[in-house]
Amino acid sequence: MEEDITHSSSGTDSQDESIHELYDEDADQQDAMWMAERHPDTTDAVLSCPGCFTQICFVCQHHSRFPGQYRALSTEHCSVRPDTYAFGKAGLMVPSSTGEFRLVVCAECGTKVGVIDHNNVYHLFHVLASSS
Ligand SMILES: [Zn+2]
Image (cartoon, rainbow, N blue to C red; front, side):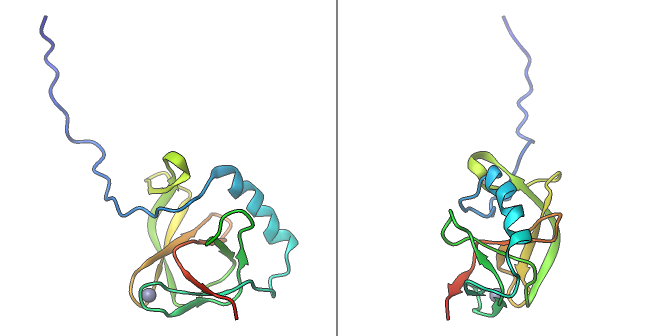
């Protein structure tokens, strides 16, 4: 019995520079709420690019459950790329053509620092934080 299955090696050649961080979906739902509740003028840390140490965020909120994750409504020296991301396996951010999140990179050196969602909330998790 022979099956002529042409080996398809085409598929998902994922450019595997995905942003690996702890991230899960229901957390995102909950996090939508703190933005409404919190005063935006309080900050937990000043965030810097891990690649060039440019300070990219002065007002952010530390995630209560995930160390190293921050939410922000605005950033400095960052640019939003058209690349879209979505939750992949294990809640990791992975490149996805149907993703709701767009990639955010440091405008100075291009390091991927996080994503921005459809509510224009930045999710920054590849950053250096210094609490002043
Ligand atoms: Zn940078």
